[in-house]
Each structure stands twice: as structure tokens, then as C-alpha cells.
Length: 276
Image 1 (cartoon, rainbow, N blue to C red):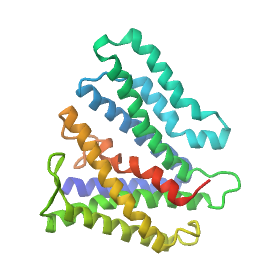
Image 2 (cartoon, rainbow, N blue to C red):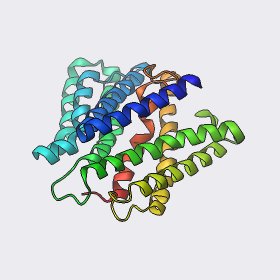
Image 3 (tube, one colour):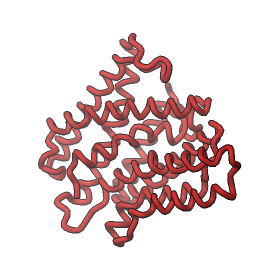
């Protein structure tokens, strides 16, 4: 627990420092690094499960797909074709570079990684990327991104503390034995409180419809999806017969263990914020 607390404080300190000093550019670099490292761990899990994804080229495409909203907004690049192009590249390569018994798995695991990690994380990039004629300031967009990260990650904190205190009824014992329904409820309530608090402090720069009350209501499905995303990651790790996706962060695990709750929540938050 001590290592987890230390890592959590350190990570939030790094995030705050990057946003304060480097604003949007720093956030874009941070999101892209997290996305690529998460994809790398996803591919390593696939390898452990007996698949053979195209890791290096997949990570290259993954970084570009994650940055696609920024590349489109800043340079007008045709980034919508990146995922289909990657699929074509991998389909051609697998015929000569993979054995017949795992060609389907190689293609599927590589493309699924790009969709589940890179494409999903691109919505977080879309949230923080300023666009011409924006009704939300660049700092307002950064705070919206911070709102998403805080509501998703503090659900983990609330669920952990509530589960330790009063957790009795197992949520999904076959997938994640330590999770309880009481912990999940505590996590959702924590996210709602955090979401409302951030919206109150940022009420001058958030979109008009993201009031503290609306932010609390938005945080509830964000928290639920964060819990589901954590369970999905547990399914992947069990398939690979691994406890953690890596050992990058003491007390937490790998980058996938850190970012899992953002993957399903970023597209929903983008929809809630009604950004162009």
C-alpha cells in the first residue's frame, strides 16, 4: 500500500507539473507516451497468450492514431485513413512473416490493440486539442481532460478504500476476486464528488452545460465504465496468465494498469462535453 500511495502522489505531481509548465504540448506528449507504452504492454500480453502481434510497427501506427485529432486540427492531414492503412499493412505482412497456425491471431491482436488502446486514447487528445473558432479556451480543454482523468482514477481510490472498509459482496470473483459491490459504489460516489468539485472550480472555463450538478451526473457512468475497463484488463491478463501488465510503476504495475480506466471513458467524456 505504501508503494501505491507514493506512486499515486508522484504521478499526480508529474501530471500537475507538466500541465502547469507545458500546457497543451506537454499534455499531448504525455498522452502519446502513455498510449504507446500501454499498447506495448497490450502486445506483450498478447504474446504471452500465444499470439504474435506486429509490435514495433503497431506501436508506430498507434502513436499516430493517438495523435490523429491534433494532426487533423493543426495540419489538416487525412488521419482517418490511418487505421485502415495499418490493417492493410499487417494483412500483407502476415502472409510472409507469420506461421499459418497463428496468422489470424497475429492480425487480430495487432488491430484490436490499435482500436482498444490507440483509437480510444485519441479521444483524450481530441478533448484537449484547441481548434479554430473554439468556444472553450485551451486551458479549459486541459481542465476537461484533467476532469476525465481525475473522475476515472479517483474511482479506483474510492473503490479501494471503501472495499477495504466495508466490502463483503464480490463483484466478479472469477475475474477480479478483490472487487466488491460496496467498493464499486464507493468508487462511483467518489468520482461524482470529484467531478462536481472540479466543475465548480472550473466553472468559468468549462462549457456552460458542464455545471457541477451535470458534472456529478456525468461522472457516474464514467466511473462505471472505468470499473468495467479494469475488469476487461483483468480478463486480458488472465488470458496471458500474468498478474500485472508490467512493473513500470511500483505498487501499481504497468502502464496498462494505470491507463486502463481511460480507454473506455475517453470517448464517452468527449460525447458528454459536446466539443467540436
